[in-house]
Image 1: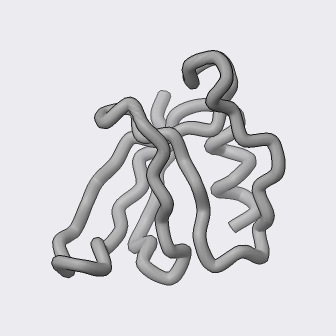
Image 2 (image 1 turned 180 degrees about the vertical axis):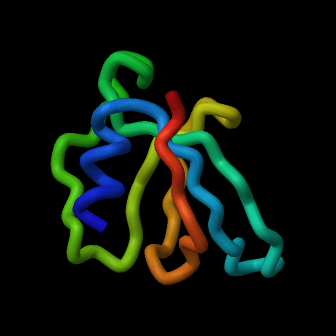
Amino acid sequence: MNDLIKSLKNGVVTISFKKIDTGEIRVMPSTLNPKLIPMGSIINNISEDSETIMVWSLDKNSWRDIRVNTILEWNVED
């Protein structure tokens, strides 16, 4: 989880996870990089021990909460 958080803070990460309500697989470009998030929307404290992680969804332009145990894979984008 620590590596994922670091990668999100550095740039764009595509996260694949299973949606709880539908079971659908969602592939979401995400970030925690302040340069890629609108002003006033930045979250500073992210705990690697949390059961969920808040990320900025680049395709929805809004915050999304992902349960850590639903993450299938993640990849850093270039």
